[in-house]
Amino acid sequence: MLKPPREAIGSADPSLIERWGSYRFFVVDGRIRLSAYVDPELLKCVLNDMAVEAGVTLCLHCWGCQALMDGKRIEGIVFESKEGRQAILGQVVIDATGDGDIFRISWLGF
Ligand SMILES: Cc1cc2nc3c(=O)[nH]c(=O)nc-3n(C[C@H](O)[C@H](O)[C@H](O)COP(=O)(O)OP(=O)(O)OC[C@H]3O[C@@H](n4cnc5c(N)ncnc54)[C@H](O)[C@@H]3O)c2cc1C
Image 1 (tube, helix red, strand yellow):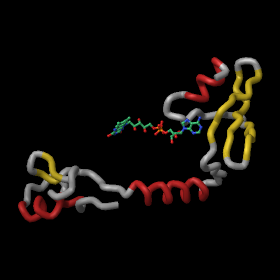
Image 2 (cartoon, rainbow, N blue to C red; image 1 turned 60 degrees about the vertical axis):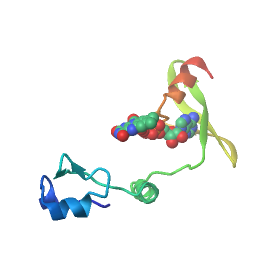
Image 3 (cartoon, rainbow, N blue to C red; image 1 turned 135 degrees about the vertical axis):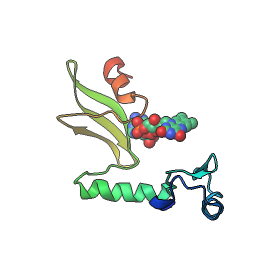
């Protein structure tokens, strides 16, 4: 992660402005701003590692396509990948699709 040192935050020192000014977010209104610049490709790898270390089983390149319902309660989802169609059950299902796709599928069925 690239960022100005903590002691530089808020400074209007011309040498610091010159050092950090070429990056988009580090200088605002002539002062060094608290901000960080992250390589998104590297961040993906780090986050995957952290999830695995926390005991998460990652299912990459899988697409949730059907909700498994018990009445109004969602019990799991069906997902598709190059390995075919599989299902996973859980005590809790968290919809992290950004647009509530699993939520919609569970209520509307498509
Ligand atoms: C143009 C734009 C600019 C933005 N700029 C900023 C910003 O500067 N700062 C800021 O804080 N926020 C910004 N946002 C908002 C921010 O991107 C979202 O709030 C945030 O990404 C939501 O995170 P999320 O994890 O809930 O969903 P997402 O980031 O949308 O992640 C959902 C993931 O689920 C996957 N997925 C979807 N459906 C399925 C499915 N059926 N099966 C499997 N996977 C599925 C998607 O491929 C995706 O990888 C911006 C948004 C947009 C569109």
